[in-house]
Image (cartoon, rainbow, N blue to C red; front, side, top):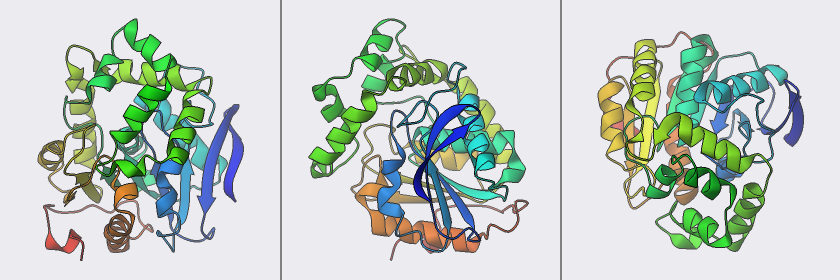
Length: 300
């Protein structure tokens, strides 16, 4: 199928699907205001799996939900997309940034649909966030900024994702501008930030505490990875993730920013493939013992 437009619950939904229908399913979820292209370097590398990477509701080229955007609304939109694709088997979910929080919300809503989680520089483990996203939590100014992106703000945001600023290529900047110009993007970004954070306090503790408790109770196989020079969600959040999810494995990428799947694609794929192979997708009842920063999860 590769990239296609589906109708999901009456909404136009864009999704990448690759691999054989019988391959174990892996779901890839992007971050706030982003699109499925954030996973493009991984599509050829995660061989042997049926890869499903949607544009989240109101992001990329997917139409928004009619309801105000929350984690639950985004998670339900992803579950509905799996249903539309007739992918009813338990899936591994790989989520970057906001996508990591959505992955955890899917587990909380429907644990039997999830084999395990790979949380990549994931939201949900601390209040600190880049100042620009925090500013979007302001009632009036935040909405204006979210819905009035300029070439300067787009370039600044794109470069902040990487240690290697050359990865903010002209093609990526052009794509980011196209996404920002979509009718739903700015409003959905603002609604998302408002539902999860405030300008004064940063990312709210209440929803994180509730979600952490639910995910920890399920004890699904979990791998948490981070870039040590993340300027969006600081790398110390990985230590917080290890505390609240003591069963999780961890891996820190060196000299990497917010998107290790782009900045270190081969190393990222190697670590993820080893994790997926350890916990096959045949049984959603998998649970695990203690986690830790095991040498088995370090890159070669």
